[in-house]
Image (cartoon, rainbow, N blue to C red; front, top):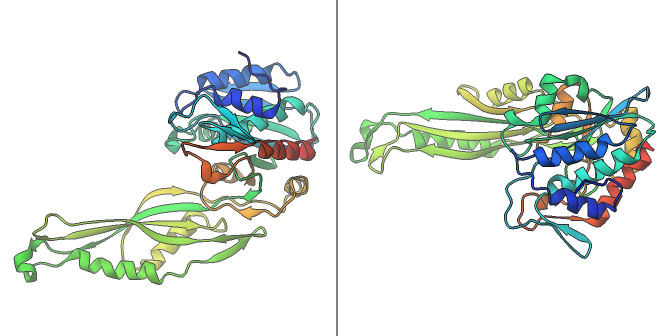
Length: 351
């Protein structure tokens, strides 16, 4: 059955939810979105694998980008969708087909927006970042991500969450000398030495910093520790895995330099990195967005794909229906009121 962007938002969300689209299986939902928006002459629709990009080309002096991912985590007995009172329940309703439903409806309805708009529906967000469809577009077609401001419709409870934290993971190790535990004086215990590193973390005082009017709290925390060879051996190595969540006034290079300073004298092996994103709430398009949405914006704690826009020089915020705390849960749901709140906000901003 074709996807109809003009039906009531709860019905549209249920129709999208019932097209199962676990990561790697987005073809059917991408086809449905492409057909639905391709029927509207004010949109130029392009396809890149299972990503769909629909653009207005009205010659407006500014362009905004609105993006959302089509895939979900695996189904857990929570399809097909159902409605219970004011909640639409089912896999992906929160993360993030509620946002996709709002996007599809708004893209079809807004035939003469005050900004040119690029609507991006992308694949493979819930899996390894190397597969991410938005990242693929950024590498292969950065022109499609170009704009003055971007909105990623991840669930935020219909509140603006600006930018996002960056994240680093690294390993720091202590080394010793292995020996039989019955003759421990012949060795040197690397696990015992790890206490020095743990004290550094326990004593660390994270920054709280204001970026573009939003307050970000940083954090430097041990998230794993590995050591030991056997129950009767003095360990010759102990490795602590540390996660640094940093504010958007730091680049990855700055964040790495800070970690190296904190652990001066120790070698750090970085295993994962993702940049932070500035919210850019001082931009004219953002000011109009804030006015249309209302409420008090807050900082985004965690990493989202807004960072991909920020890397291209496009400031971005997160704004979408549903409580992010329900994402990936077996009983995830999207409140109907959030659908209308987000849809109406986009129409006020762009209409």
